[in-house]
Length: 451
Image (cartoon, rainbow, N blue to C red; front, side, top):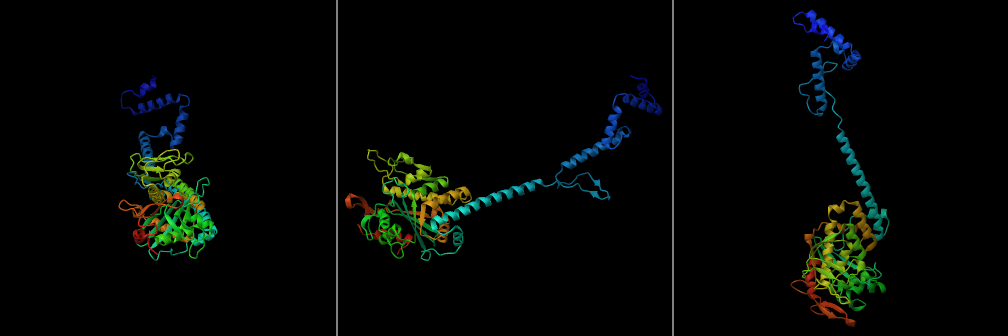
């Protein structure tokens, strides 16, 4: 230690000696290379020369810096507790609020989502209008104008709007009897009670087809096409003859028709992500139909309980009756044959209606576009576009609980019996007799209307 160091710390109250000792200590520190320059740099950063600042001044600066750091961490709407600054005019200074970047980000995200939604639904809207030309004719812009025109549906004034649904496999040339309407159903909307009924007509009903004679009802459509059926008040061709045959025997009005091929059913089910159908066979093994080919995903085999079906499986179920094959394979789970088949068809349609009404389909542009594709290329109807819009709105307003199936074979009564037609064909006729439809009419007319 130097002599000057001991002089500074020597006992006594001589202030001059302590002062001389302080300068001596500083001189020793200055002998270190670069020390004075370091202090000058520190002084430049703090706005003064540290060697001339007192201990209390440095503590005050530290407190001010700490308070400033705490202030910067406060949210914009928090008060500055215990800390006040003065502005140049002597008024209290309020620190500027932070920019609310989170608000800008949120608004930008919402704008982006809305933009994407508009693009998606704009695409669906154009796709819809384009597809309408395949079903209703006209042009996309012309159909857009007609779509919003108000209308009153046929049958709406009498309280029942009846749509004839017929399905065939004309889209599958390799399928025998492709033009036969193996699925025949009347969908009736009660506009007063807001209920709906699905009345299935077995394809093997032996009926007197006007102008053609007795045959199975599923042959009315191809006969009407081949003979170019024409009659005032009815559609031309096969659907007109099928309508007249149904009205003549069941005495129920048909207001519109929709002819659907099997591809439509398969594609619609696929477009909405499949459907759930509850199999309730009397056989504990469930359902088995060996007639469904391997090329079509067969043979059909489903357990009892809820099954999630894709389009092909739904189509296979709608066609299955469990008949034995020519090579001796025997199905099970179809004790009522065609009645089981029509019941499964009604289940599938109900499942489609429920799925189509869900928000997951209605707000999904891709799924809606796929549904429109399936409808546009595989369905024909005599509805106008504004009539179709209103009919769909009526169906959407009906829940599955208000959608009832009507079959001609019930747990309490069978309205049909077996019959052997021309050439040994297995057929069905009313239980009361070949031309006696009185019991059937009494059963269905209160629910779906009468002529």
